[in-house]
Amino acid sequence: MPAQPQPARSSARALRWAGAGILIALILAVVLISVLGGGDDAPEDDAPEGAAPGGDMAGHDADADEASEARMEHIHGLGVDPSDGALLIATHYGLFRMGEGAPERVSEVQDFMGFTVVDEDRLLASGHPGQGQDAPSNLGLIESTDGGATWEEVSLGGEADFHGFDAVGERVYGVDSTSGGQLMVSDDGGETWESPDVPAMAGVAVDPRDPDTLLVTTPDGPMLSTDGGQSVTALEDAPLLLIADWAADGTLYALDPAAGLHRSDDDGATWDEVPGSAELPEGYPEAVHGVDADELWVAVEGAVLHSTDGGESFETVHAE
Image (cartoon, rainbow, N blue to C red; front, top):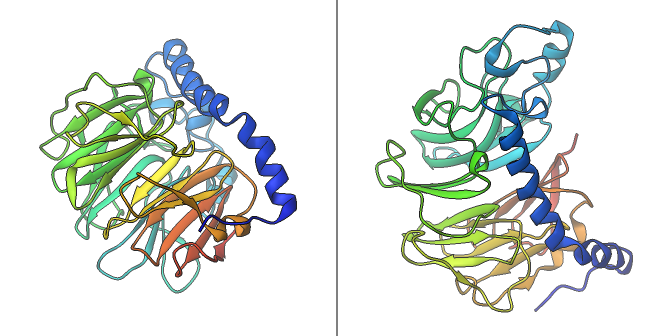
């Protein structure tokens, strides 16, 4: 049954929904403009504080670097370590791990954009280097096999910057910001890629039960592909969505541009805004990760929230 948000939040959300389509279009437009005007250098805002494009030491600020090490600013992805259930949090200042205690940074300070957990021995990501790292401004596809402590390039270093990102086994999907939201697909773990002729998009979520099935978010609403991204079909009557994730049991979770949480139990055919939406903070939706029909994690405006009842209610586990 659709949620009944609190009156004040409902009014605020209604105002924000009025421009939701424009918001997503602007996000894609800004990405494209930055690419056309920026050459090979990453936008200054995309580099961790104190860093210069390509890892140049110019402008080094030791105090800023030290402060940044403990910050979880700009969350770009969430995932759960299958080995112990710890939450992995990809941010502007590195990859953090949160178990029973406070989040702890496990990687170097660098900007993680797209991020996904393939299995307990393989993490995939994309983004930009941090201070002093000898790497191109766009890292392409990078991989960690030690829980996120160290990372190696797999492909497309200096070429691609995946903001939307997901993978199942050897099938990897990325939404490349340097090409204005182009979907790219790999069948060999990210070694080689193809670019299907489909509309520009903001995000992608793959069905873990079937790597050929994926949901993509676009300025015109969410679309579904059942042929590995070679074609997409609009989901009629679906809400406008910005970020989505497919849980292992087939439950779909998604955040709209106003940080409202939606759920689908029939592969996107129908959606409900769940009651827990009223408990999420106002702000920019950053990430959502579904574990199963009961458990999910959400990041909004720097806050990380956890639900164990399918989004009916949330506990705030971290807030900047």
